Length: 113
Image 1 (cartoon, rainbow, N blue to C red):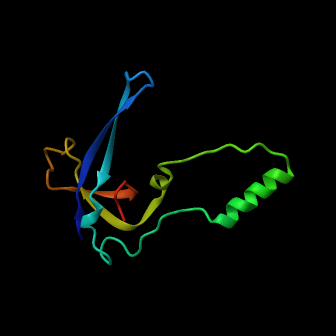
Image 2: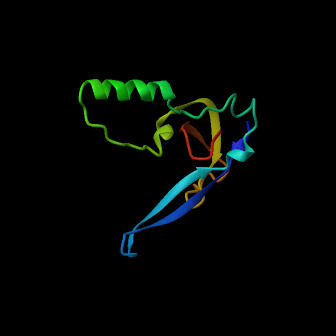
């Protein structure tokens, strides 16, 4: 089994006046080390079909509903993994008593194929 590495990505969110609103950290997988047939069998990017969008718009118009926009940036992260994917312990969170152990992922991480 190939063990996928990970790294932390840091971002600073600013307010409109330029002051710092909050700090964000995200653990991302080094998916470029995954091997097809071992770590994954196919790649999938969930997108909506144009026909579905048209159908929803036509129903909204016929029912005189208001339409609002919603964009979910991390929706795919809630998906459960079908394959067994293992990652090294995240930097900064390595168990000192078991440093050679790995983590089995149950849900997606950014960067996975």
